[in-house]
Length: 425
Ligand code: AMP
Ligand code: GLY
Image 1 (cartoon, rainbow, N blue to C red):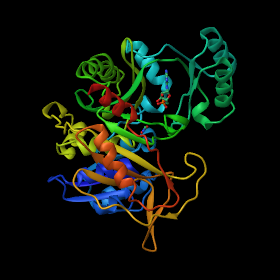
Image 2: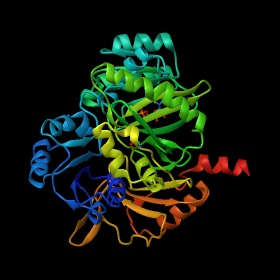
Image 3: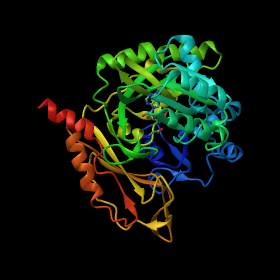
């Protein structure tokens, strides 16, 4: 099978590494890819938003199956264009990608199908949004409706903060993503991420993960795309997984099918496990980054047939097997991230790795034979262990071998799960 993978981050490196192990793979291309992905696939310098270029590539190489990694091309309708040209695609249609592209769309679906989530209001102007917030009181959550690269959410602990966040959205801090604002009740609990494949009708639960979104140790400081993650999430017991499937995923699948836009691809449900059980914070319509990296380390099954079954509508014939051992990944980022940072700094040494360890490339390039950091999040140093504590120790032992002057990472990834393990002994 000839496969094209779209994307260039750590998530796509993890997918590429796993996909390349499939006996079904005959030719493997990635656009635009990165130096890590280049170990597994032929890189083609076409951007993820270049729909014409991607279609031309698929035609030229007679690609059988396209796997779309990031959300932006999905929300922009890449899957629809490819399907119209007759290609099989892993990833939702533009209409189904609204589950990530519009928070208001998802909240309305939750309301119609009785999916547990925080009470909310949708607003197109500051006056009515502020009026609603004043009636609800703080803490309260203010969200730009559209895609804002993880930056459009303010968890406001005070009324002043909430009102300022509303002004920010309508003053254009998030561009057109903030033209509409969703105000949502504050949910109290422990967060977890849940991943589930879907072919429009059938669901196949994958695995759970927890990430660290804040830049600083102890989960402090500003939000980032994610500074590290581990899988599984201890809070996601078998009962919570079952309830999530029944109360959240299944009605979503039904709702999307009934609206005429069946969902195929991966659901990445951001959950808050509250006193009432799992509640939906948000949907993403692609794998998490860096959550995907820890999922791929734990997946025993061949990934390619699973993703293909999503595109073909045959997911009910498949199962996924997992390694029980936890996996943990530490994100190494450029100093200054998520703010401004220096680009093109050299990475002098990467660690020697053994089985159950992997350094995924997230934002790197090779220039004049030298590996350089080109992005904010640059490397995902990943390991498996018999406990989260052991996976953490292995991952940081690898981090300590990386010689990259301009890099930094959090030293406490997995702290909550490690603490839980300590309390269990
Ligand atoms: P999101 O970009 O929607 O994932 O939101 C970013 C972060 O804001 C989430 O990971 C949560 O930590 C927090 N958050 C979002 N919505 C809520 C909510 N309703 N209650 C509490 N925290 C929330
Ligand atoms: N790590 C969070 C995300 O991929 O959205």
